[in-house]
Length: 186
Ligand code: IMP
Ligand code: MG
Picture 1 (cartoon, rainbow, N blue to C red):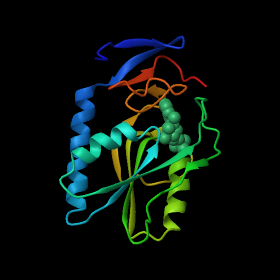
Picture 2 (picture 1 turned 90 degrees about the horizontal axis):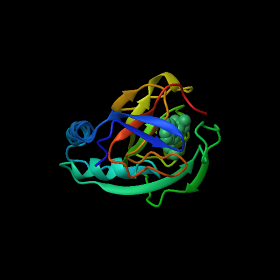
Picture 3 (picture 1 turned 45 degrees about the horizontal axis):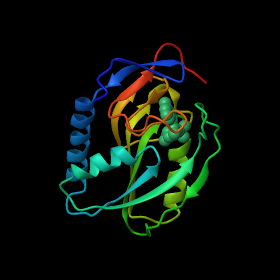
């Protein structure tokens, strides 16, 4: 499934960027590192909906430690392909993060505004520790200074879809990642 090198979506051409085996291998490495770093702890993984749901489900199944999960939903994009810079909380935390080891799970860090917003919010809940894991980071794009503790892949500043990431809410169910061909779109 999803072995095509090029696909067409909404009149744009997308080319294969990361295949399924590459995703799984890297996720196993991240899970091993996290299991080692949190040895004898029980961290709580907070997935940022919608994009992180597939990555998070694969990541936690590769862990060798106990963990708990929670989800939040924020919106910075609406259905546009360029961040508005405005973050809206759509679904807040359910768990009490006080004195917990929190690991926030993101699909992608682009401008970094979502991570910055979440960091402030989580720190106000007085956790024991907070770390961030993101499957993807668009390195050239970050407009705010931030530290991502675990990074799957650094990728070019191009619009991507698949493996949780959407174009107007579609294509999250691709099991590989495609990037738009040619220039960025906005
Ligand atoms: P940031 O706040 O600008 O870092 O935006 C992060 C969020 O924007 C991610 O969690 C994604 O949901 C979304 N996003 C950023 N880049 C892309 C992309 O290339 N494709 C699809 N969604 C993206
Ligand atoms: Mg999105």
